[in-house]
Length: 294
Image (cartoon, rainbow, N blue to C red; front, side):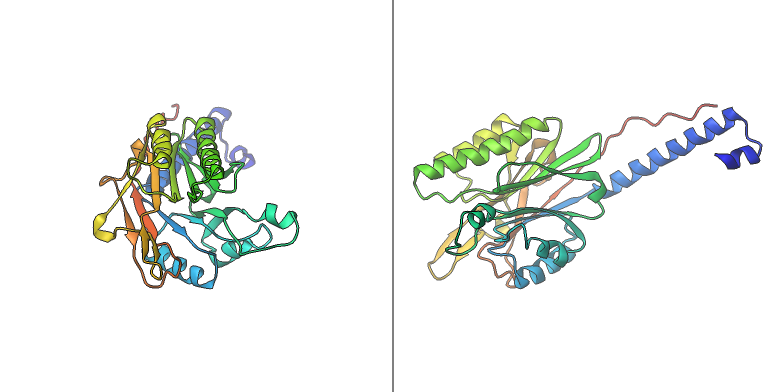
């Protein structure tokens, strides 16, 4: 401001200049928001353990498909070594929730690693994003406030496997309850949840009806897959088991034009789950920018 005095600007002229700068800054923000969210590409993958082969595959597909948001399940990482993700994928800001911490603190480790979810946001969005407290390791969520009209919450969800036990029902209700809590807390936001649902999107099953009810009550759409890209995401060739277990659920307003997601049946993905990809087209509607005073 001192330079304005030297140049002989009056106080009113200085105020006008500051206002003009603020208006220009706001205009640049709007142009940037519109550019960033014109086509939002979201990819979900059950890693079956985050390792070197996962890194090589994810790096390639994120580059090929220009992925904006990457959501992972079954990372099998602890809080102590989850930095492996951010070190390997430096173009993304990582929010990770470990499912291993309770097992580690409870004593001797027995059996293989398990669980773990993560949301990775491309760095071009990073300054608009904050982590969402989920209170449950099966869910990791991040809020992205791109604009007044595009306040988004992205969630990586790993539903439990249905083994027919009472514990499964309890875990399923815990996951759905946690998702509902996030939806309630950020009621003005729109949502994209993706991950390994461990269930098919077909009627007649109680677990499917539980998720469908969550969708109906919160204006969410359970996306269908593009049949031309495949019919299953989980594959166990040895046991000849194939199921469509990985899905996206999004707010009605965010549903892609074709309402579908793609299954990426690619040979360099060594997980027992194929990745899924969907494009969410967003429109940023901003309030009018006032003209500076004259």
